[in-house]
Amino acid sequence: MASAPPAPPSGDWPADVTARIESVVGSVRDKTTVPAATAARAVVYGLVLGVFAAALGLLLVIALVRLLDVYLPFHPVGRRVWVVDAAASAIFLAGGAFLWRRRRPKGA
Image (cartoon, rainbow, N blue to C red; front, side, top):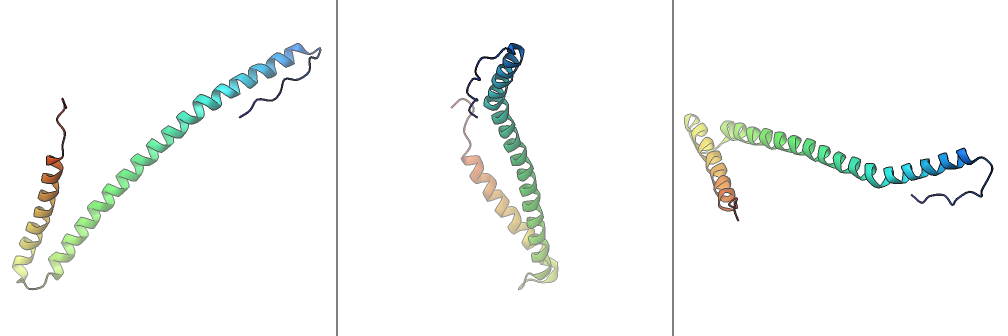
């Protein structure tokens, strides 16, 4: 925000000083508080979005497992649950192993 050009000198110097102080404070606020508020807003929205995404992912996994428990073809009814649980466990195990291999030691 560009500051206004200085007003011509007048006899009302207290009003001129007050206007100058207000202009400086506004300029400092625009350069410090506004970016900090924007960054804080981005962090909060990111955290909220992350929580919602994690909850949605968990609900989708639960829905998929339940759907496969009920409608998995080619297996007797009693074995569907074990097959689906074993498949879901294998998927999560593979994902965890992949992430574990990509970790970085603290000192490096």
